[in-house]
Length: 401
Image (tube, rainbow, N blue to C red; front, side, top):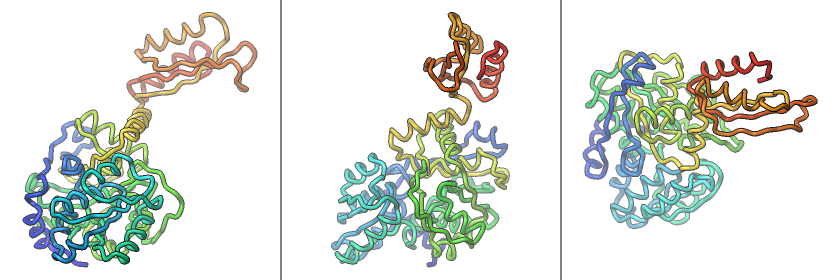
């Protein structure tokens, strides 16, 4: 495959009436933490809640009349599905979307609401993809691949044009990477304009197939079920085509982040940037905040690529992020089972300005001696240093923490 700057510029003209030019905001708080000027490209505010509509729209507009009449089919964990569904509906094309059975309910319902016929099949993107290709062959639909498609890549590349117009002096751009269509398009656009700019990909450790291909030249396929906050970039089988044609040529580095780091980034975006990002959308920020020894230069742009997060998942992510940052803590304390023990503990917590959310007594645990009780607390704290101060204060009373 081949995509040029001219292809991306043509795509921009084609899709301009149907997509938003999203903001690229400077973040004082992120800049202070990282020691580099940090800008956020907020594609989570794009139509359908992610960047995916750019590539999907460009692909739908490129179809022949015969292809439009027959219809299209796509596979997706959610965001590509919504982009294809809305793009197709706007231009009067029937769309069928195959999604994994474990796709977030909010994304499934949104895809239906945008006008697509949704089929749930398989437990991963790859299983959904193979089934979608099978249906396409049987019914003559045009298969809209989420990344192995020149028109889709060119559409995603329009983000790169916008970023460099909004922040011309950038040293680097950090982009979530799954299949590679997004980072490829952005890299082609950015490096065509400024060859010195660094393009850095970020992937979750839970599904690090493209990272392994980039760093170790290991082509790995994950066969076991996977669970990750970043479901939108959970590609079990990396694309050798995307790596050979684009990523190996245009991307400077790829790093991985943990689930805890993703959750912390989601919480940071909520608290400090006042914006909602899904796990995949927060991966690039997770890489920047977690000190991965990235060569960001003086000014970097972090792509927040999507905000379509299920409410149940976001509540879990917030809790996970709060624990990782020392804002939420579980304490188990063993004390003598005598009057006043609980009162003394709660007074220590009050003196240290910790807020008690939950408390539970256990008198029958196997780790307890005679006349001992275990008291479990869930408390709100400031940070890990605050937690350690509370532990030490409790230990000074002779209690076991």
